[in-house]
Image (cartoon, rainbow, N blue to C red; front, side, top):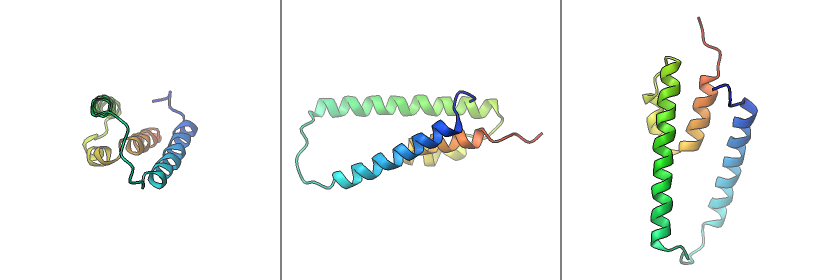
Length: 97
């Protein structure tokens, strides 16, 4: 976990928030999508694979630190990136002896 700096995580959270806001503002159109169904399915499959891989990493990191990962499951399913960043902040707190 020492690879992640708090400044990097904070920057990623700010960027995520800005991009989410931008996509919400721009996504209100009623135009049809130009993406092929095959492309959309492939993007979805890759995203699900990434989500599973990240959650397995979260299980490993919390197990090493003696924490419970299952309380993070529901927030992770709703918003994976912000939950991952919050977990990193949580795990970087100094451990009490």
